[in-house]
Image 1: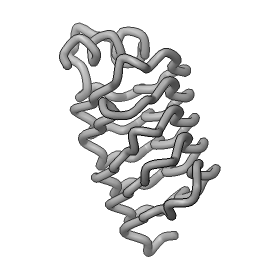
Image 2: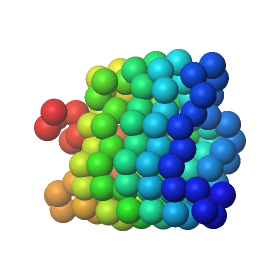
Image 3: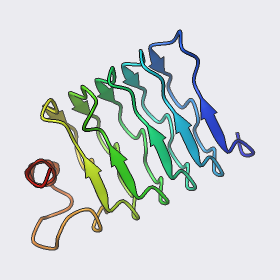
Image 4: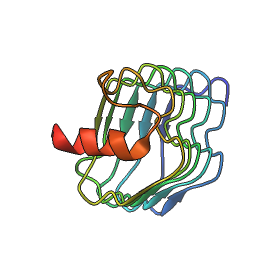
Length: 141
């Protein structure tokens, strides 16, 4: 995994499995095709070079630690998806994340989803409170 720079998943799967790209430290681009409904826990954890992710409309869940420490990730667009749930620490320590679009379908978010996401929200919003962050993100779309 340490030499992988781009991942394109097959069309006949419905889930990105547990730790699928864990520690792919030079991974830059991920294309998740239509039909995938779940991004499993730890799937892209420590993918420190990840910058571009394409999410399908079919996506309903992003598991715990899925994008933990993806420190190069600047933008995430989930607006066109059917995401209902973001797991614990899903975007924790994504320190470059400055823009995120979330759909109205988002209902459940775990503990410290956006921990250390201080570029994502103004200083008047407590970045470690997922309820406050999601409310803010939905209000600016």
